[in-house]
Length: 349
Image 1 (cartoon, helix red, strand yellow):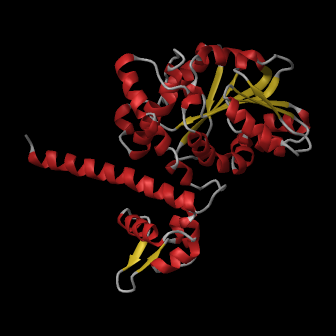
Image 2: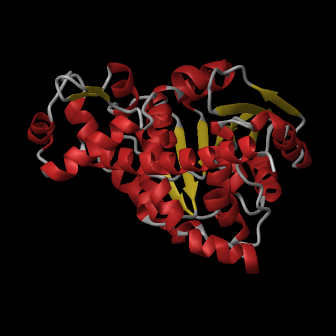
Image 3: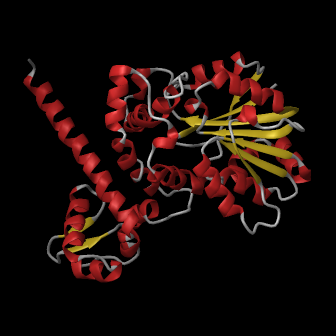
């Protein structure tokens, strides 16, 4: 055996285990407000952080030291102080912005909670349906995506489709399939107040959250708790969105075919999927590794739980485009939108 290669692997295992622990500690930091308590305050002693956060001193001390070793906080040895750099605070203490990364930390605990069931599925088949994930999973997905939908969906992403936005400004129709807690729908409703905006999702808890959030809105959007095939087909839609949903679907081709029948002749289906390459060797990086973990513990398993296709989160652009064409769409365009984590497709009749 190559001893250096073996040592490198041992180091990788320790590094990856440390990464998991760092995510756990960072999750504590977002949930307790520790990052926010430190943001903009420069160098702080343990007592300063305890005072600013209102948390228990011994836990805060150990958290601070752990976050230093993980590289999240700076430490001044001579002064014995801790600091959250401005650049780190920009990503970790910035809820509801389009650059907040704290929602990622919340995914790990609920995903690992279902690990025993996923292991059983490896042996016996089946999977874990979305309804069986802890509520924290919905909250983490919400935190990961909300800022992007609120700040980028209309002003940046849909700006690539000026013909569609013009129709929505004039009073068109838009449908978000797999709407979750409704943030795509709310962003569309705010930007296009004279249009009819509809969200559909089979998860009752997500729809209940969306309906509660829509209370009091003058021209409230409509949310439907159902799969798409159960939604009554009325007038055609100018815009239909599938935001980080396509790869989760148990039956992607029937859903895409249904979407095509509901799309106006000059309408657009906007699809957002994880940014990965078609070639595995080009995906040897931390982003793709994260996506494959999400896939096994969440995306793929919930599809297979319903005897579905189990596409997984890492389809890549070639396989994704093939799905659209199999469903009968003639025009597939990968939009030139800059994003380190997503690919964007405009799909037309």
